[in-house]
Image 1 (tube, rainbow, N blue to C red):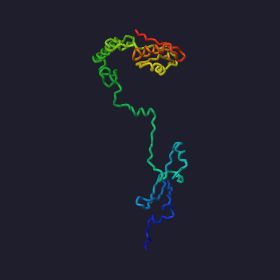
Image 2 (cartoon, helix red, strand yellow):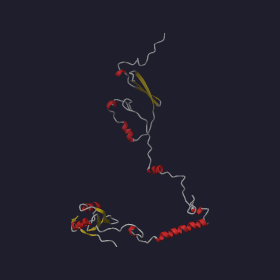
Image 3 (cartoon, one colour):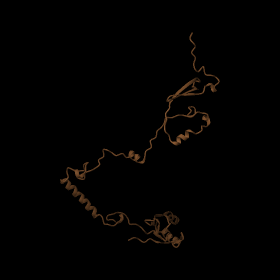
Image 4 (cartoon, rainbow, N blue to C red):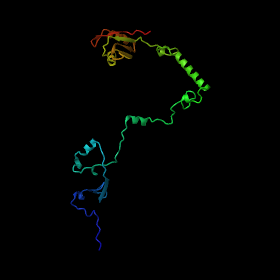
Length: 259
């Protein structure tokens, strides 16, 4: 007579908490097998067996230190490692950190198909010294065009800076300095913000310039303010001329037109 085959679920002792035995694990070589018991959605007892491959890796000190932290809450009495009931194990994500040079190379790779040289004679994708048309009429014509272009460029150079509105044939109006004032006797520590704070209560302005030393960056002692309206410029002269500011007496006058 054959012995009756019983299910392992029927042999589970009822003394366990919730009627389920604790999880078991054992190591077999490079693999660790974990056996767990739980109820499925239908209320039936099921056994889950998971196998893990044991691998040793060198990690940073921060990761190694974090693994020694004391567990708390529902995982206070858990063994080392994640608990499937309280921890969701996701796939490992590997990050490859790139240096600045690697990033620039990845963003702007060299185009292998782009020509590295261009001939000035025939516009071919080779150096001019290796051009097959060098010394021919095509070469002479290209040199004549380059010389004519250089001559035209030399005639336009006067050796002195000319504002755009003073150039020949330039359209536009001349600079209007009728509402500009010159503020002098300023301290070396004067800044653009201080100058704006000094004149903004008088009226709106269109432009402001604070003269600074080229090397030190300190204020040279004077500034120009272009007010939007001439009446505000006159009021600024009346209010600020002789006004004490930063232990100095300001001198404010109309800006003289530049010749």
